[in-house]
Length: 280
Image (cartoon, rainbow, N blue to C red; front, top):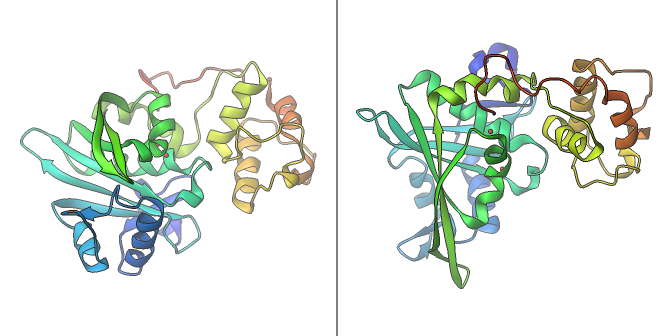
């Protein structure tokens, strides 16, 4: 997909939104049935057939969109908006990302892209998500960022894999989200970075390089991929600390911290922001 030919509202830093297509269905079906057995794929006590699963992506659904990495064709997940109540100005949303891409900083961008789309094209004042505990990881960074508000937790809500798991309800408000979504979608957020642990969190948010990686090891030795290298280049360039230390695979996280420590010690929000930004 060529992002330059798409509506800017459908394009993020690393992902684009497109409608869910028939070839996506088998992939989504396999991911949900192998990664989230029973949690997302049960109907009247039985596992959904692929036909019923395809129908479930349309039942009471206002809009469903797929997440695709820029420059690629294969989707890595989807989001749905359903149970829309236009009189009250609210609706529910659900997000599914392939576990293989979690921990790369894509979940927050995916959720932000979809929510921006909903708030711009529909007159919702707030959106809600009900998330089973095994899937909370997808929403962790969004909640920590501040604009995904936890409304409540219901313990032992759903039978899952031989026991009961809880469910958490989240809310996103229109005004607070739209004031702050730019930082994640355009990479313009700045963070107060005064120590290496804080910097490692920022680096993961912006490039997908895991904050748990050994900071003394070469990036080439911790297995960063081509997308993360490209994001690292953009990250260093945006913060004015792109120097001649190449290739990136030979740098350590400690090296990058030394390059960026000064330029990143700036305000962690936009002047117009009143809250922070989101997801996985």
